[in-house]
Every structure is written in C-alpha cells, then in structure tokens.
Length: 111
Length: 112
Image 1 (cartoon, chains in turn orange, blue):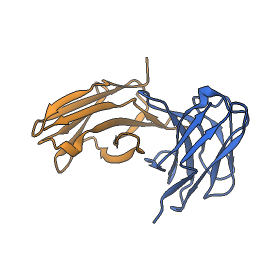
Image 2 (cartoon, each protein chain N blue to C red):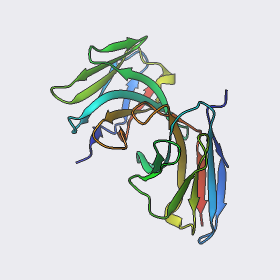
Image 3 (cartoon, helix red, strand yellow):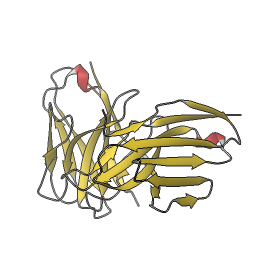
Image 4 (cartoon, helix red, strand yellow):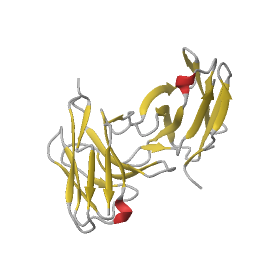
C-alpha cells in the first residue's frame, strides 16, 4: 500500500460544478499537509496548505481529518482553467526525507 | 526572480552516453531535490540534499549520482544512460526539508 493514496480520476465535471478530492495517508507521524496543482507537462505548483481547522482560499477549501487520516480539497464553481492534476503532499517527521507526494487526481472541467 | 532554474530543458542521448543535469536556486533554500516523473505516474524522488554538504538516496537512485556543489546548485549525473531513464526530471528546493517545495520547470530527457 502506498503511503499517500489518491483516486487517479479523471473527474470529468461541467463548468460551474463543485468537485471534491480525497487523499488518504497511512503514517500517523504525518504532520503537515499540502495540495499542489500540476498542469500537463508543467512543474507542480503549491496550491494551498491544509490546516487542522480547515482553510479556504477563494473557491478552494481544504480540510484535514486526523482521526481518519485523510485530507480533502473542494473546488466550487469549477472553471475551465481548473483542469489539471491535483497532488496531495504529506510531511512526516520520522525520517530524514519528509515530503511524500501522492500520484495525483486528474480533473477535467468541460464547457 | 528566477526561483529554480534547470538546464537543459530538452536533451536527447544515445544509450551509454553520460550527461549532467544542472539545477540552481536563488531563494537561499537549504534543501534541494531531484525527481523523475513518467507518464501516468507520480513524482519519484531520486536523490535529495537536506542541507549543503549532505546528499541522500531517494526512492529510485540507481543509475544516478548527485553533487551539491554549493548552497545554490544541485546537479544530477547519468553516467551511462539507459532507455529506462527516459523521463521528465524535476529539480526542487525548499527552505528546509519539512517545508513545501518549489519546482523548476523540468528537463525532458529522451534516451535512444
């Protein structure tokens, strides 16, 4: 089992839809969490951090459930420009290399 | 503000050739990383350098070597390229190893 797991998708949604992705992690030593966005053939870019109390950045909401060991990303009012792969990233403190990337969830927003 | 700069952006090699991928960051970050990403797959860590003067193997180090030349630069060397090393290579840096990473725009490497 991978340490960080994501549904690969693709999620195919119409413009204006609300879509949610989950990411599960297996190592309870995980301490910090992030969502990255990667456009086709481009580098990953940090989208937002995920805080314990949940946080919002415009149309994007991230939440953390430590008890069930998952994080989520909610995108409201989807835009065509939201089409990308969303990578879940977990930081764990019990090894020298700390950032673990999920394989990503692909989102396609159609007109 | 360049961030993380990788050179070259594209390269085609023949099997058995060697080459070095260059990476430099201007953000005064302590930690630097090399990843490869293959079609339909996630990022796989090749090597990382938590701080200047240290390097460690990641998930897929075989066939590669690295040099942390100074705080700014972290190079990746393929001593004898193989077709299985055809991939997109990303360099990244972060302030420290427990903070999110900033990525370069990648090197697309094909080995024939």
